[in-house]
Image (cartoon, rainbow, N blue to C red):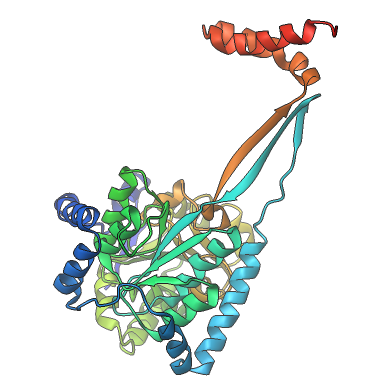
Length: 427
């Protein structure tokens, strides 16, 4: 169960807040060998690894069109309605992130602007495992479509009806029954069946994460460094212990390498949340997974809210729940977190599924420098500029002086020849 630490010194925080991340040095060679075989042998390697790792014989690598209609027919109406509502909320939130092009005149005759342009080819990975993560298709597919990506490829080893229904709902037509490292390799390098993409998105186990990092080294972009899921909760005596316990368990059930952290200013919160945690854990179908995750987890008692906020910013959690008085004001002091949930009635599950924000978030402390997936993740920002003859006369001397000072005479001359031409009177 969760270890309880009381009033740790600040110099002990780093060790205390370490994630249960595995050493991947031995993993990299194995993953790299799989990637290279996919690169060299394409579909043949895909079929080989499907038989070896997933114990399946892949006849059709691409999901046939008829399978989507069949999936829709068998899916429960209530679940379809829930997926549709979540899709609507996620679409509303991400569509509002679209930028209008704004031309800025930095000085008379010098115009500059920035334009978002969709990444033309993107790949989405949805793991199989013990739960069909169809919600991640919404989180990745919807912003890809809003951005205007011309080709969206989805790889997943799962043919669960909710996976296929959700893919069809958001407009993804190219779905391939490929999982694991071989799926990342197929999208990174392309095969006879799978188109090559420019950027790969999606969660996965340590093998998938390692594969994404390796293909990133060869020039294929990825969404972000990501690892096991995590949540931190800041709770005071105003929290509802049953709610806090439920939030902790909602992340602990993700996987045995997940981590949850409770930071509190109250001894009674520790007692009450622990009791609620034990009671709820007994009823969880995935209690074995959650129990292992709780062994990696901590309850930390601190002297005051200021210390709690400092500690949580140092931890930089994927998800941060503020179950305390003045949550709105405290939220302004959060500098390092993937996504923040304020108040007793804002469960982290809302962001995972349907509130509208994206649940693909940085883990393992990367929230110090990375944002979660958004519409921006699917576009490039290209800058443009246009200078009139008068504008060049206004800015030319500045460019010439700076280029000369750096010893780059050709840079200077590119301006000088134009200025000289402008000085020639019309004949």
